[in-house]
Length: 228
Image (cartoon, rainbow, N blue to C red):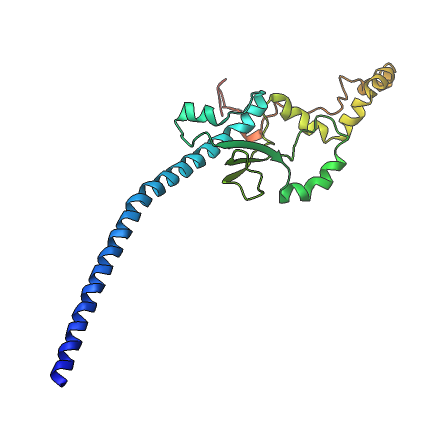
């Protein structure tokens, strides 16, 4: 009886092992089919996201320059055509600019005190944002991809910026804007007040051609040439 019971257990163990091998083979086959389908899909999604990141980076680099030049912003089709960035037509590109960052919030009260100055062009709305999201998506979910870039809006772009900005911070420039030059002309008629002439006492004057003393050329002894 013990021998029969042992043979029965041995046969049951073999059948269980065979069933486990069949189930394991089926599992491997199913996982292989899933991987064969999922890997190309995953690669496509990663490639699309990478190209979308490149698109937003290029977009935020040129947005301040195009705004300064008065040009329209590029759209997705422009980047896909010029840079061969394929992200599909189901997304829309949204661009915005704001002053919602810590430094702007902290310095805004000081800037309000300087609003009366003319030509004081140091803008705070220099935080550009670019968002890629599916078209018609009004669900309120976070966007598919979003980038922020703080542009250097204070860099002088014209020679007048090098003169106008310091002038705007001087009180004498404000007095000049009130028409004090006419008073100077009248006062300078007097012989003892010629120094008050607008050509002598220049209100708000900024010398844009000033040269540091260590950059001046020094004449050599017994020679007309100099060293710089």
